[in-house]
Each structure stands twice: as C-alpha cells, then as structure tokens.
Image 1 (cartoon, rainbow, N blue to C red):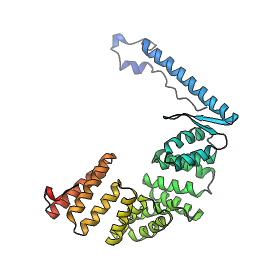
Image 2: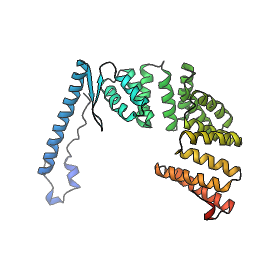
Image 3: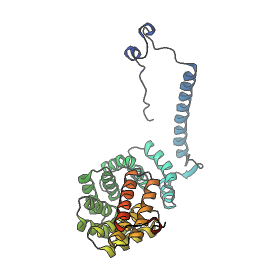
Image 4: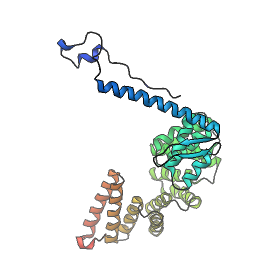
Length: 311
C-alpha cells in the first residue's frame, strides 16, 4: 500500500497570525465547521474505497483477470497478458488507455522492470516526460542491458536540457541496439543544439533510415539541411514532415524559412502564419511569438500587401 501523506495540525504560532490577541485560542485550534467534518469523513470513505479497489484488483489478478477503470469503460485483461494489452492499445493509437493499465501495474509492482520500462515508454509516447524520466532511470537501474530504456532516458534528459547525460544515455542505447531509431534522433537534436549541423545530419539520416514515418525526424533533417544551406534537401525534408503530419508547426516553420531563402515571399509568409497558429493552439506561446516576429520581418522584407498573403 502506498504511504498516505498526512498534514500536521497547526500549532499556536500559526493562530497568532490568524486571530487578534483577544481571540487567540488557548491551546486547541477552533472546531472545524460541520461542512469540513463532512468533507473529511467523505475523504476517509473515499480512501477506504481506494484501498478496497486496490485489494480487489490484486484479488482479481490472482483469479486470472484484472479490471482497469478508464474514462470510457472498464478494460478486462487476462492475467499474464497485461503487457500485450498495453502494446496493442498503443499500436491502436490509444496510449492513454494503455497508460491506465500500466500505471496500475508499475505502482503495485515497483521492482518489476518490465512494468517500469513499459510505463516509461507509454508516458514518453504521450509526451509526459516528467513522468517518463524517473521511470526510465529506475528501469536502467534495475536492468542496464535494455536499449529502449537508455534511449528513453536520453530523450527525456535532453528535454530537460541535461545535455551530457542525454548524449551518454543515447550512445549507450546505440551500443546495445544499433537498429533503434530514437537515440540517433536524440543525438541529432543534441548536435543541432551544439550548432554542429554536419554531425547532426549524420545522426538524423540514420534515424530517418530506421524510422521513415516519423515527422519529427524529417523536421530535424530539414533543420540540419537548412543550416548547411542545402535548400533543396531541406525543402524536401520539410515537405515530407508535413505530408506525414499536416499540423506540424515545426514543419511549417522550417518550410517558411526555406521559402524565404528561395525568395518566395508570399508562400513563406503563409507557412509562417500556419506555424504561428499551430504553436498558439498547442499553447507554445514562445514559439508562436517567434513565428509572428519572423512573419512580420518577412512582410517588411518583401513589402507585401494584405492581398498578397492568402491562407
């Protein structure tokens, strides 16, 4: 059972800030309103239900079936096939449902490397890097021979700007499995951050060879080609990223920059506007601002009128 955090009752000094001297309680805090008592009792009841539900899950799995509750409906999974169900849900494009299963499993079995590893993978798939990072660290600690765990650890470390550890983990993943695309992508991103486009391109080409349908790989390839001023290759990579994901803000941004260099002003502005809109919708306000500023520079550079810019 997971430990329950409990709040200590505030002492006398706490109440010196809340009451005038004449109202200061002598030793005990004032009685809680009836509504709070009801809420507290309700919380205890809910906690009991949670414990009972966990016990029922354990009982059910021993009987050969586990029940996992999600927003849509319960998922019944045969004992011993939980990880199969998780992988199937991810393959079907329902990683949120897969998370409902694997999160229950790794919390109940904190020393099971298969559950911890799969939990890191599903969180990573959902872009939940803050949850994926400690799980990947734990998985590597439990078993250092698993390439995917090192790859996820490298990618999540890079997300949190832990550059050298990210590179170390990614290289370790490649040594364990040279056919895994993720560590090459992470290395490419690291080299782009280090402004070494030639090394980035080498790593990203390998990532693209191993994962041809990943728009992120193609976006990073377009960035590397663009920095090396290989505009034809950069444009092809950006257009491939947008073919795979038409709502890729990074794809529109890169294509706009390429078209700008090719002196295609109106097209460049249209794609930069799409980039700004998509970044704004995703809540990435910093990049939305960069897109907007770059768009305005393009408009001034090409002296465009409103009728020249058509969405």
